Length: 161
Image (cartoon, rainbow, N blue to C red):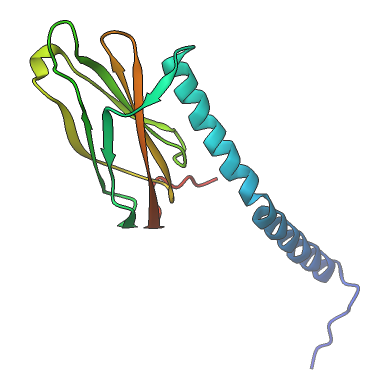
């Protein structure tokens, strides 16, 4: 039978690694709310870059996204904007921002008066449960918005560090 020395260097190294890992895990769970706030602030920065100093109003935009999705890999997203789509009054662009994704600005869809209607249906990837924003810029320079919250049970867009 072999005996293990309590003060052996390999045992101390293992114990240090174990305690370090526990400390990191403890800090990670404690810092999670701060990282969620950081993601939200990144999304707000993206929105600020899009609208500049213009006011964003509620209305005219309708964003439909399921409130609960099983997988964030394929989430159906529908956006429609009330607009006559005439040469003088039309939707120029619709921006979709997801505050929980690694890159918040998911996509931008451009329209012209020849588009007929300002509607789109697509599928997006969502990294986690989050709020998704749709911001429409009109031809007159005004901005309109809508948002929807969704709960994702299986995340997508995960980053490996």
